[in-house]
Each structure stands twice: as C-alpha cells, then as structure tokens.
Amino acid sequence: MVGALFGPIVGVVANQVGTGPAFAGAAVAGAALMVVTFLMPAPRAEPPQPLRAAWPVLRDSQVSAGLWLTLLAGLSIGVVDVLAPLRLSRLGASATVIGATFLVSAALEAGVSPAAGRLSDRRGALLPIRLALAGGIVVSLLAPVLPSENSLVALLVIGLPCYGALFAPSTALLSTGADRMELHQGLAFGLANLAWASGQGIAALVSGALAQATSDLVPYALLAGIMLATLIAVQRRGRVPGSPLRAPAPSRDASHG
Figure 1 (cartoon, rainbow, N blue to C red):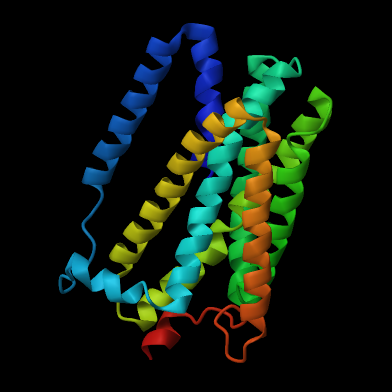
Figure 2: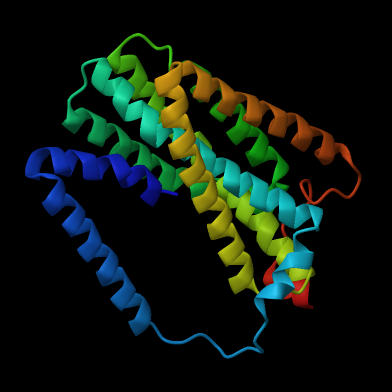
C-alpha cells in the first residue's frame, strides 16, 4: 500500500533527470528486491496445495469481504494516483511539491496501517473499516473541488491514509477466513495481490479516460458512491449475530488449538 503511493515520486525524479534514468532506476530497484527475495531462507516445508483449492473458498463471505475491501483499496489509490497529481499541477504545484505530498502521505500511511491492524485484532474489523470508508468518502468528494494548492495538499496528506487503512482489516478478514477454510496462506496472499492489482490497474485506466471525457468530479464521485454502498453493506452485515466483522481475529495458536 505504501509502495503504491510512491508512484508520483518517480514522476518527480523523471522531471529532474528524465524518464529514461527514472524508470531504469525503478527497474534496478525491482531487480535488487528480486535478488533479495531469492536469498531469503526457505520457509518450513508444508504439503502442497493446488491453485484450484482457492476457488471454493471464494464463496466464503469472510474471504470475499476481505478480497472486496482489498480491491476497493486498490481502486482508491488507482484513482488518486492518476488524478491528484494532475490537479495539483493545474493548481500551480511544482513537481517537487507533488512528490513531497505523496511522500509525506506514504509516511503517515506506514503508521496508520499497523494501527488499523491492531484495532482490528482487538475490536474486530468493523470499526477500522467503517472509519476508513467514512474518511475515504470525504476525501473522494473534496479532492476534485478544493480550490487551492495548499488545501488539496493538506487533504491528500491527511486523507490518503484513509484509503490505505482498509488494507489491514481486509487482510485480517481474508487471512482468518482462509485459515478457517484450510486454504494455504500463500494462496490467500496471492488472491489479495490479484485483487489489489486489479483494482488499481482498472481504476487508473478508467478514471483517467473518464476524467478526460467529463471532469475529475465524475470518477471521484463514482469512487465515493462505491465506498458509501460498501459502508452500508458493512454496517448491515456487522449487525448480524456472529458476524466475523465484529469478532476480533483469533490468534494463530488459538485457531489451531
């Protein structure tokens, strides 16, 4: 999640040194991370689980809720990553200011996400999800209409972590549901990555085209509407007795005990 907010930082570097060196540097960094991954010690061997084992699990309400919220977080960042830097530029912000805005927001997100995870572990996923969705709706409605560079910078710095705060409770839901359904956590993590990447990729493509054909307000309003519908659905599901949204995630030891 935090990494996704660093996208505009690459734009700042490209503005200073050119697109070739900027993207080459990103490619080198990616290759270095791949090398580090291969050098990490292998995990404990477990019985293999085929990919087809993941499909029945998708019908589980807890798993599907976790995947939807993960996809929604990706949708949110996809919209903002495309539209917010362009609007800041139209309002007169320099490339450095745009990059700094997303960098500070990413730093705040790095602190908010673990806090949302701890809150989800203690009190259940419902509360952090409600707070994140409510904050995301406000940010989505204000981002395309704020009239000045400074007001939009302040909103993005404070508000973007609301989108990212969805990631921790959604991962908790997915992990707990997968554990209960005896799905390997590696496959569950792969499903989460697929949902995240799909949301971000679709939103980046559609929001840019839609904003160009209409205005920034339209894709942001659609995002706010999706978040509002999700908030209403979460509220209703949270009232159901025994809802996994209300229960704190069990510890790994307890779940296997």
